[in-house]
Length: 475
Image (cartoon, rainbow, N blue to C red; front, side, top):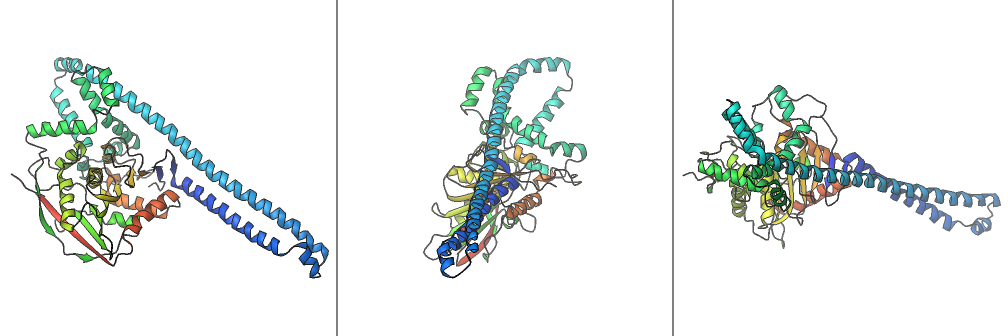
């Protein structure tokens, strides 16, 4: 497995490994230490002048030490300057690479969108030709629709043991995952072209963000509603665990380990930690589970495929309703400071809740979430952790939250995939490993971000945790 973390975003165009950024920080620390040593040398030099040495009866030859001290000061200052320049050079290289990558991505996105619009515009002619030449057209159409729903809106289904061997290797290939990201971004342009909209107009609509992932997800949901699936319902509280004492998470790895993983024995999908300090409003940590049930209808589980589609379309999904209701039950108000942490669908849910502006969001932390096209407000600090071989994150399209600190890692770089586990890079255990590497990193960016998360619950005189279980209200 790969231990290399790639860090980007955070309000800058820099893209670098944590080792590069750690080296840049170490060089700055070395410059500071060198200047501290130089300060000590200056203090000695100032206190022991040649006149003082002679008045003490010390041989005149010792005065040559004065020249040595001056040489040492010059050398130390030169070392400090070189360390600073090297640090700046490393960061400049990272920024230059990031700018180049941003230009390539923007160009690729634009070209892919225009090509998709043209292909979509020509699609009806192709379809007519296929009808007369391809007896298996219905089967091909079914495969295409299933693949689209699976990868774009029901991608958590890949947690099930449904793929293996060469197919699993393909789905876990970073190149395929990146291609899927771009493919998700162009489905809308293709669909618009297929409806007969001229490619030039589609390009204008795409540039103006009139069409996008949310619009096509909404179309899928409306079409599903006609077919009797993908229908949202109200949710209701089934049960809670008694409040129990808790300590705030100290590390990123510990934070990931607290994300709920619902089971028959522990069906709770939301974990809320409440921190209280006299004279201050209560603070809340909200941990959100991923998809639990993959059915598109008839299930009482709100963390299902319907919510996946709804989260892609907007803020009205069942999982969003569950977390908002649990927060109200826990005593969260619009003024209460809140930190959201989620995995997979829980990551998308956390992003939607932050986007809503209904809560006083302190920070958002997601792992393996399809958050690329969910606009987290720039005022909300966010850490988004993604594996480049995780197909689920690709279902959210390209990551457009530029202010967020994005941490990437290839979970299975250079190592064989485990047998019997589809898209293993999406598993929460793998994201826990990435979190461990983040905790060990010397990168100033990662250390600052982790510190911001860790201090949220510190200083509380009372801290409790409660878990919440919700179900859909079925007709």
